[in-house]
Image 1 (cartoon, one colour):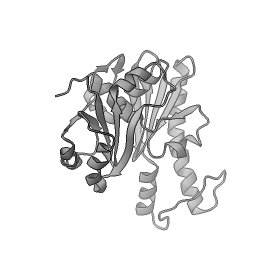
Image 2: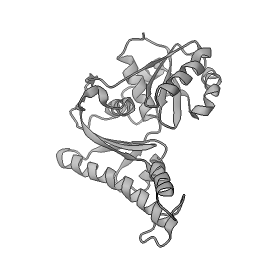
Image 3: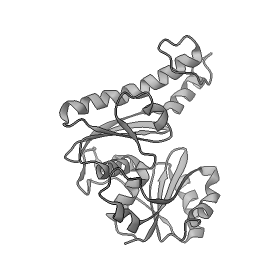
Image 4: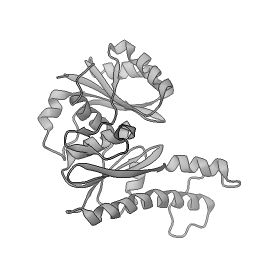
Length: 260
């Protein structure tokens, strides 16, 4: 087994990374409420990638690197180059038909985004109940998981910042707006902000309602991503924010795939 592992989540706008000692993770298994025992964790824009080896090595030498990547070939090459100084090369993980007792109902299974698969794997580790897994990043994904471990399906829509930019660039007179959420918005900035929150939380509540009809007890909900805190504040649901949910899933998936 790998003693010290570097986990990567290469998203559309940032690279999230974490270093962990796998022995410490195994010692904490069984306590779903415990914080994940990271040795170091951070995030970088792709322009900041040259800083990665220095930050990683501050936590000590790593012996392997696994990750999920939705950022494309250019980011893949840049990450590999940045990690050359650490002596490890990333092994990129993809969605499969199953992982542990998690079963993939996507069609075809391998077309499911690797980051979504990792988040589902981590959620399954945290609960044996039905769960909704929300990733609020550049895109907003909302995925449903049954108590039996079956990934039922999910939705993808633009995230808050993507919608904000679309309004700014595709509508005359709106511009880049940052307002407040109001019951009855009466300024353009507040209308935009309230609309963005309504769109995102409405999508989450719609899928939660569908899952709730078939699940007992009440489904769990895990929220991760850059806008997790912002959205969770407007969800009248028992949502738990897990900042490193995808990275946790990378760890669990890596233990099921032997190093190459």
